[in-house]
Image (cartoon, rainbow, N blue to C red; front, side, top):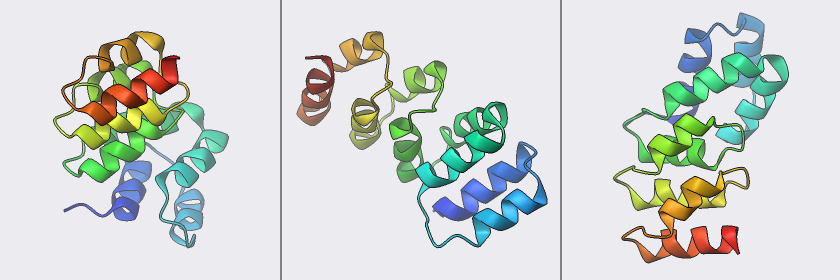
Length: 124
């Protein structure tokens, strides 16, 4: 299974972040994708959003969950993840305070109760 930090570093390289930026990420104690993406957004919002889109396709549900929760994830990424096979990824979308209403309304009808409750809490 893909490691969160290794995957993040690989994707950051792939989208063109500088070696200095990659080195600073490697040196961090934190494994948190949110921390890394927030740093990336400061450096280059366009590249960071591209990285989130790439990571949203990971086979590792934990990476997709982190992307779903991230407030910088583009609409099209959240829309795709709203159909993820893993309920925890869909639940992550309901934790994202910037998830658009149209996606939350769709999740109100999810088969998993925790996803429905999360969407309901966000909407009301």
